[in-house]
Image (tube, rainbow, N blue to C red; front, side, top):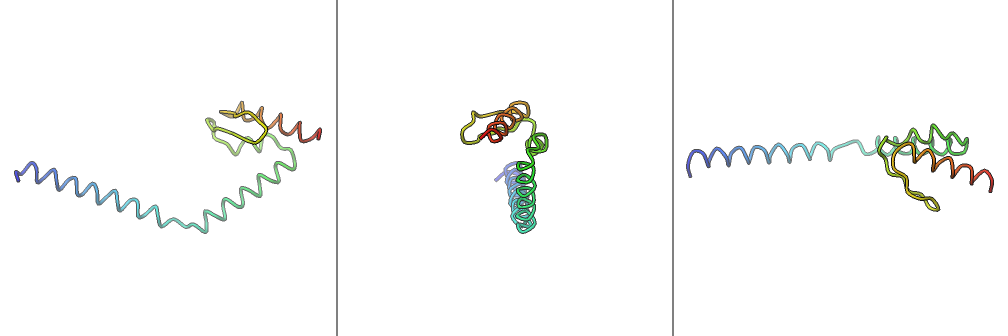
Length: 95
């Protein structure tokens, strides 16, 4: 094996070790804290929905988010998502 091949093999092994090490760090995330945060956001969303706070509801989505809900057409981006919530909240109010 030439010096170039040996160096390439060592660099590849080092890159692989760093990649695997990085994955293992991610796997040790605090799942209880993540679960608590999700439940808190869900509770907040439900309160905002009951209050019909359209702007707060839209605030849960990123600018380029994709939104799909039963009985509505798919929406992409905050403008379309805002319209979907507006239509949905209006339908819910009249029902």
